[in-house]
Image (cartoon, rainbow, N blue to C red):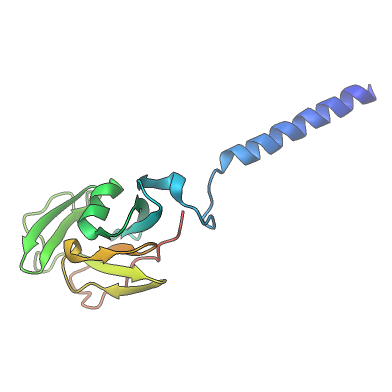
Amino acid sequence: MRKHLALVVSATLAILIAAACGTSTQTATTSTPSAACAGSGTLHAYVVVEHLSGSSLQRCVAFSGTINGKQLMDESGISYQTQTFSFGLGVCAIDNEPAQFTQCFPQGKPYWSLFTEHAGAWTAAQTGFDQISLQDKDALGWRYVPAADQTPSPPPLAHES
């Protein structure tokens, strides 16, 4: 009876340990984000998107050398639509927000504000995202903000996945 009970307890512990190990393959503190990154290469850049609702998403892209903002967005798999301006490409919609539009930056309507993150600090972009060159662990950040917000705050910082 004791031997049977010990066997049942051992088997139960083994199942619990296997389940706990199998449910989390990656955490935010992992320093090698290769498994969760699209693309190929040893360097990683991120796209962070914060919607008007406050919900956000992040994608990691692996690359070699450097990557520009357009390449990063294309590799990230996040859907987006653009319009060409004198400063470069402007984003009209990201991740289906807004669901429909007739102008990229309509007066009195929310718009996508662009930021770049380097060494853990966001900076408001001064060019189109296609003009931005990113290095290892840099991020492109998008925040959909109300038209009245003339000095939008950036999205959440990127975290290595």
